[in-house]
Image (cartoon, rainbow, N blue to C red; front, top):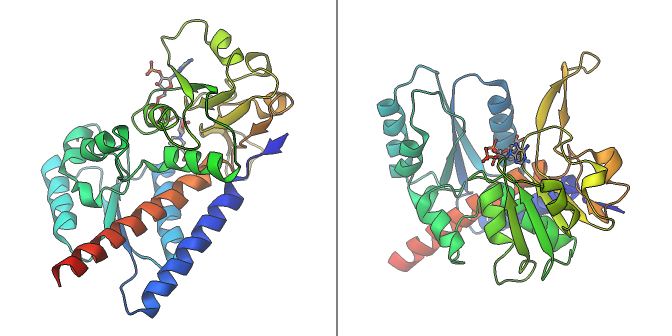
Length: 298
Ligand code: NAP
């Protein structure tokens, strides 16, 4: 059984990115610049954004953190988005979700310049992804595809069951893994809370991708021998023995499932670290596109 080490692969990718940034700096070019917008004080969101900013520093990117109070109005947030769209020093930016309830996430998403949408959430980029055109791919599914590639996992003609149909993980990975491309070409079943006989489906799967947010949902009796299991779930579960008062749990009962799986991602240390690495990769891409545009003009 292989433990798919996302921490190791993400460190490799970050090293590759760092090297590219150094090469660019040596040529007198600006490093890529990622901005992050954080609204409110949600603990998990703050942790995610801080890790993204720290990751930028480590690879030599410039980063800007825009912190706003929960009480910010939708119009004020759109004004900030407009400023980021028009700031030529910013290559790409993210708006950390979720946003407070009084703000319409879709309106914010639509306000982001697709050329700076390094999360790949804008319908323009999502549509391009679905049509197999080059674009920003949402970081988590992008990270999963990269793990499958770097571990040389056979995907073509396999039956892949994806559990969860969110716009940021389940739906895009179901599209990507079924595409007519290397490390894809799977036959996909996309399951959700209205799916019946889910265990019947998962037992027939060669590859299972869980993105539901239900700790240890996938048990050993739901998988077949030799399957590949990719666990996207991250849930904070209270634990008075833990230093921080909680532990992180995936959607997979790792203890049981790892005994039957051929390859499996752990939580933490699996898909999670890949998300940040692929966000950096998208930002690098965004800055390269700008370089190309500027070169074309001069
Ligand atoms: P989400 O928006 O919370 O949606 C959950 C999905 O799971 C929905 O499609 C829901 O079905 C489905 N679902 C819930 N209970 C189910 C059940 N009993 N059986 C089958 N399907 C069920 O999902 P998300 O934002 O993709 O997040 C999922 C998990 O991944 C969370 O733990 C999140 O923290 C984690 N995550 C991790 C990363 C990372 O970097 N590793 C990134 C993003 C998210 P319906 O559509 O029918 O409601």
